[in-house]
Every structure is written in C-alpha cells, then in structure tokens.
Length: 115
Length: 117
Image (tube, rainbow over all chains, first blue to last red; front, side, top):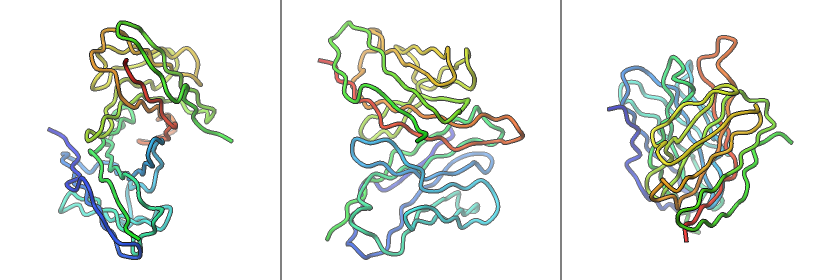
C-alpha cells in the first residue's frame, strides 16, 4: 500500500541547534513532495515543495529539504532552530499524473524547542 | 488579501444533529478539499472537488456530504450518520490542472473545531 511515514512523533531540540525531520514514502514512482507546518489550532502553511530538478530545495523560514530517490526520503532540515519553530510538521506526497491533486499526509512530527 | 476562510472557528453539535461547516476562497482556485484531523493521525481526505458542480469522495467520506455550486464555496455537512465527528476540520484549495500542469500545491484555511456534546 502507498504510504507516507514520519517515524518521529515528537522531537525536542535546543534553540540554536540543528534540526532534521524525517519523511519516507512508499510509491511506485517519484511523487510530488511537500512539507507543511501547523501551529496549535491553526491551518497548515506550506514550507517547501519538490516537483522536479535540483534535489535540494529551499523553503521559507530558513528550512530546506533534500529528496533522495534511492532512500525514498524527503527530510526537512534547519541549521539553527528558533523558539518560534515549535509546531507540528507534516510531510505530504502527491501522485504523479495528477490524481486529482490529492495529497497523502504523514502523521506529523511535533517539534519542541528548549530555550 | 487573498485567502481561505472557514467558519465558525468552534462548533458544538448535539448528537443526532446535522451541522454545516463553511469554506470560502478568493484565490480563484478551481479545486477545493476537505480534511479531517485527529491527534496522531495526520490529515485524512473527506471530499474534494476539481470543478464547480462536481466532487469526489475521499478516503473517509461516510457520514459527510458536500456541494460545489460556486467556485468560491465548498461547504461540508457533517450528518448524524457520522459516528465520531469530534475533530478539527480543514479546508484547502489549489489551482486546477489546466494548462499542462500536472500538480499544484494546496493552500489551507484556519480550520473549524467541531465538538459533539
């Protein structure tokens, strides 16, 4: 079955430390890849996306993600975390060929930032 | 400012009642979506619509209904047949697939929290 896995439910990092959030997918072809962030009680905001081309993509708020085809991964990174980055992060994939623009989401990673 | 609005922000329902959640967008997007979010389960697709007067079931459509009479609006009705409706509901929209694009990112509204009393 097709799936998106975020293996870390919770992650705690100190402010100023680096961050990597993991995302793996299981699809027959390379999907379209997204990272979204959600603050408590709010909607989702798009951080970055990968459709094709350069496998290292830059997003908003200093985030970047790297697509690794061999590992079916799209991990999110940030060199230095700020307290305001505390939120829940969702990886999502869309099937090539359109699929009605539908997205499949991972279960999310809750990020806590210690001051 | 362009965006997606959802109302109300909080909604309380008695068992056996139908309730309707509003979603409006002024982004001129063709496609709209409804998701349900439960703790630890991510987002699950309820219904989606790629064009006015057309919509398709998502992964968890049972107990829900939608309409798409206008491009800007995609209301979701939670019926009494939905056995566990307490959740956070998110509406999203995206550009259509015309013009050779094979995919478009989705933009989300602020959500409606529904609680069954």
